[in-house]
Length: 456
Image (cartoon, rainbow, N blue to C red; front, side, top):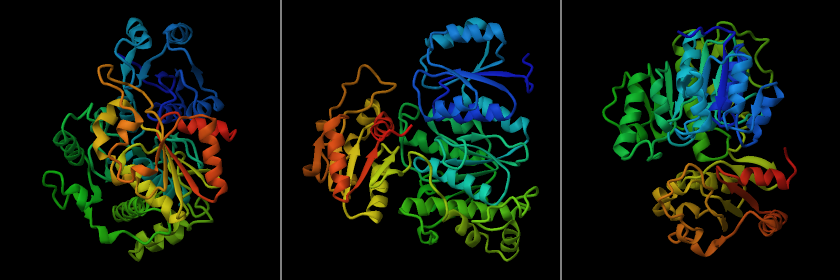
């Protein structure tokens, strides 16, 4: 029997990841003693270290054993990316530690703190939409706890606020993570098909989302997405149509769609009662709207309109069309649908867009290679990098940039490149010519960019 108290000590194996990093910050906020390991330094590990969390680069099991010997660890939380024979997993078993992935620990926090869960799920757009939801509540002075899969300019990536009644969570479908939760409200940003390692067939993927909606108290999503799923009753889901996209000043069609979901979520939450019982006008941002103005909006039934004012001030999230310098942007996208959507957004800012693209995971490239067709049509030049390898199937042949780009509609603009001085000079030349350079990928490209710009 485990004694789960505020004195509990938690160890996170893979603490710098987008899943465990925010969770580690939440655990620290809740008063637990936190430590962990990650062989890769990142913005996330830097953020944790600044608040005093010990992050060990070695994962051979020795540090875990030493830490447990000094102050016994009650809960070992590990990344789904760790293989079953990983040294720290083996050591945790040897020490008899409580071992789970992130979902079970987060579910414990939500239940222990009596929080209402607002979950953001979907194939694409989860991170930005989660960031928007957090931004709105914070700007209105509404205490909020949350976890988002990136670093933020307006707060930590994960936070527990003892005064909050809501927990906003980027609820990932990978490894069936989302099915561990029963949200009060869910937002479905989009529905395509992804993570074939978890869902071998598209029907499996759709069935998982149907189950997730069934587990949710209420869901808001787009009709063109939810109509792909087995029958969902009107009482269970608010299905929006494309013509209902609100007129935000945000750049990018998909951003305006995601923002509409957040505005409708605010409208729904307000209809359920007092959205902010502990908020005050003094807590609300002077740059957005006052709490009193929000109350008046609720009474006059124009909550979505008022929330639009707040969402239009959203500063964005890191690695999602993040501006690093003049004419230079970094984006996490690595799927054909994400590429097309982000290039469309870039074209709203510039008529001349240059893309530097780093594919992510050879396993996934075998799945999407046939989808690399017209998704690059908005780019006048594409520098195609070798695939960033991670969690690979050694039996699969690594597809080359030439093979991956063979079916691209505007193949003549594609140039095979690498992360080197020649590429950086090409990027600089494009920027100097007034072109917008967009660097996309979930691998090493962002870190390389920041190194070139001396951004840490």
